[in-house]
Length: 146
Image (cartoon, rainbow, N blue to C red; front, side):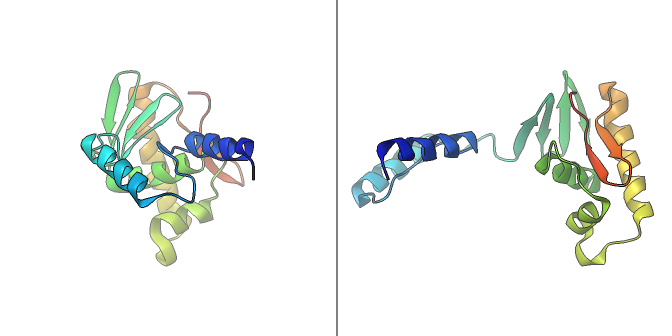
């Protein structure tokens, strides 16, 4: 493996969200220095937060902000949104959503439709734009662009 391959690995890691990258083998002294430097940065303030297109999501507070407007979601609504965000921009099937939200205890599809409707109303009315699209016969996905 050459230096170019190592550089490509680092670039891929940073694009995936890494904020540091260590090549192996690493000396214990370098590892110790890196850990010490990280500890001096203080606690991270961005854990539990994510931005997708114009949506700023705080999973800990269960809030979603778009264009300076913030809405607070119920626990189940936030779980549904989280699954849709994880798969963005792809479509998530009803079965996958039910499995992710309820696990093996998945209810009939009517409760999911009701919760999707409530999530839409909670976000689309204050944000004045469609947020979730239904893909007939396939499932749901976040509307894009928004």
